[in-house]
Amino acid sequence: MRKKVLIVDDSKFNREMLRDALSDEYETAEAGNGVEALEYIEAHRAELVAVLLDIVMPEMDGVELLKILNEKEYMDTFPVIIVTAEQPASVVEECFDYGISDFIRKPIKNTLI
Image (cartoon, rainbow, N blue to C red; front, side, top):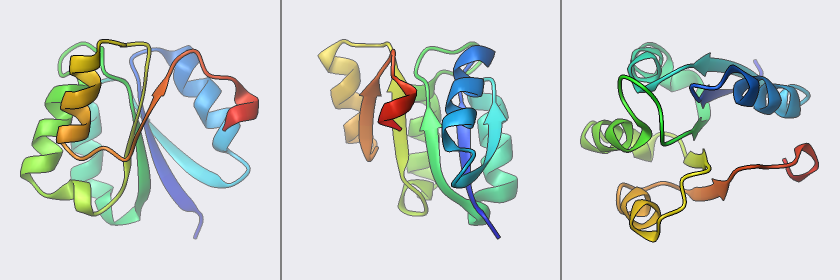
């Protein structure tokens, strides 16, 4: 069974770019916002090896999803890596407080993944 990464971003282009970059090594699943991501994680968390998470999204943003994942202690199950254009230091600090593994700023280049 291939390792599965959940890509959470409201931009279809960004999800496709990350999916293409990871497709040789990982199976990917996608969610367009935190609500969809939480539903997927609830159903498939045992299959996940990582979550790539945007911050700014409709319905439920990445920080709110992090809060829920932290409360449910899912952050110990798989690493969460923030991939976002959001830059304020306070947001970065808050994400690390919730237990993320890393923070990557967009735009990213396919050669870096």
